[in-house]
Every structure is written in structure tokens, then in C-alpha cells.
Image (cartoon, rainbow, N blue to C red):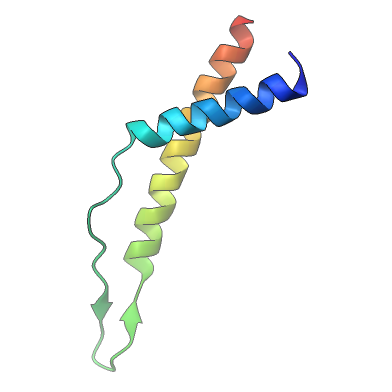
Length: 68
């Protein structure tokens, strides 16, 4: 498998995984007593979503590459 074939396979699998995953519809930011907004929940939700997509895409890419 050439470098270009691997790059194309990875791109295809990432796109498929992105379409298969439902992103959160809303992120709620909370404000503490001093008026400071906490974006920690939003950040954690975003990271979890991105990692789920990457895990799925990586697994599918490896499966496809090992079949060839």
C-alpha cells in the first residue's frame, strides 16, 4: 500500500466516522458567583466527541489496511 493510498484511506474513514457520530446539540456554560464562565464541560464534551471519531476512524482504517 502506497503512502497516498494510506492517506486517502485514512481521510475516507475519518469522514465516515464523522458522519456516523452525532455531535452534542447544545453546550451549557455555567457561571460561578464571581461571574466567571466555566467552559470545562464544553471542552470535555468536545474532546470526547473528537476522540470517539478518531478511534472509530483509526480502527476502520487498520481493518481495511490489513485486508489488503
